[in-house]
Length: 322
Length: 170
Image (tube, rainbow over the protein chains, first blue to last red):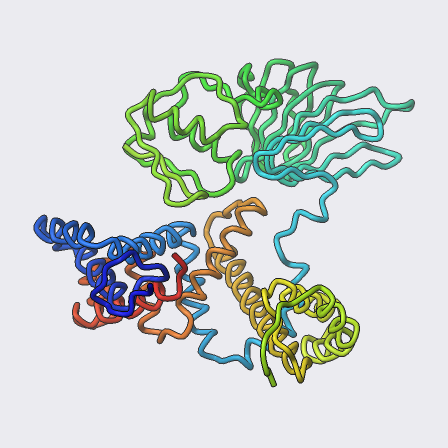
């Protein structure tokens, strides 16, 4: 039996009717109004509860909201406005662009011309031609440029742990180059990480020498157990290296009395998508050792140990809130 | 041209592929201007046909192939336009935004999906939708910004919302 009469309320398959969708949109317009009253909220709940078809129609409104949450707002707004303008210039224009756009292909953000790379959440070990070992942390790109004079490792993004091997004689120097300068190994094990506009090095064995790109005459030696952050023309102060700086090689994140905001920022490096932290909970404190292969598990546990809620707008978009 | 449908089999596609693939590649090459993209698009066209549950019985298979290929060309052009817009927006930011290739891909996919939902809406309607939904402005704020009444803002927003949720799957 197929319901042919609209009054039959037997469970209906198929998409919600136009009328139901229109009602859902009207409710959305009301609820989204800055002046919405508690009575209107209750009326909406009544409407929602009155018919499973209403729930189905409303689910689409929610799905749309989730989809809109899946893009960074400050980027999405200009792009989507611009796309609207380009659309009006018509199909012909787009096809012309299709012909011209091949020029752009090389300009795309591409990890594919990198010698070694990891995806977000991935770690990888690599042995180099001279026997030196590299460990790549999450979302990292490295190029190797060895020649007769030197062994050069170019860190393009992310973080690496370098363990140098003794080179054949005569030994060639081994350096890591970052956008901010060069770190020369003095027979050693050290961790290099790129930060926005800065590089940071933690030395675990022996020592390294750091030369900022624009002031290479300012050489700074960093010894075992020390750390240094530097920019392209200035050196930071030497500080003790934290014991946990290479915990990532064991798949762990070790936090000792960290601000929650910093902790979430660190977790976000290992998780695909957006992970944010609301200002009001940013200064809560957290300590512990956390397994990086289960970020969603860590987030779930946060809700138990701290007065916070994790709000998932979509699979890729989560935010820690009060 | 279509006179009926029957279940598609790999055999049918294979036959079509053998007979028309070279021709389609040539047709595409003339339009996109390079053979690598033409080869990709031709391949995608046949892949698209493989995913159809039923293959129409075709009297003019080339006409049909061109229809699919043209759709794919438009998709590709849209994607490239969007990727370019994305890079331009990033380049204009005061501080660089580091995104991993995965996140980049996800953002582009999400933007394309939203853009497709808004396809065909007037510029004003689109703008109002974006100001409310992405900028988080109130109806009054948007009205003031554009010199329009709250009722007009709500009408435009309602129209955009309606189109979006009509185009969505459950």
